[in-house]
Image (cartoon, rainbow, N blue to C red; front, side):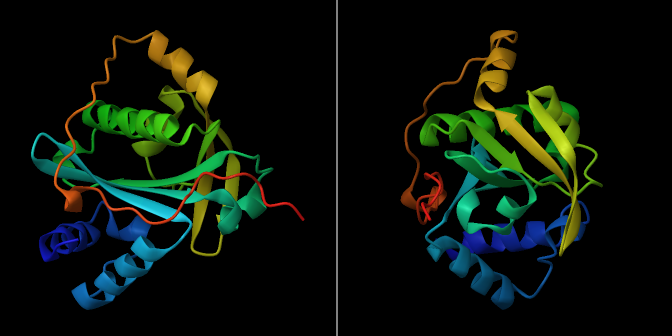
Length: 195
């Protein structure tokens, strides 16, 4: 990862539409430490999402069974956790947001072959929650996590693909970009640990 990549993400974390939700509006050094720990965690993979040549979103996939969210619902084998943020404010609207969240969801479902994607956006998030519902996600109540009051969202693979069948959506594979464009660490989609 380059210093430029850290600068992009650190700048996003200071923005008023991101800071209240992510709570990472800290110094660059402190943020770089957080990002380094995230990149090297065995249960997470992170990606910087581009539209054309413009970085527009940050996506994290993580193992449900190594995350506290598993304590708030009945986790199933193959569940995958997802955190996302849309950086530039101009992309945080119902049309561009839909395009980005739909693409990120399709990417994770295909890459990890998971049956469900689990998210827990802050209940105040008026853009992401409606988009998740629109693409087939279901809200399974509100959960009180230590750092936020969250909407427990579950995106079932079959519901998502049924949604896609009703839309004129085409996903194309693009050539792999520079190595520092996509960052990863660990294997997030796994079977439930046996006791």
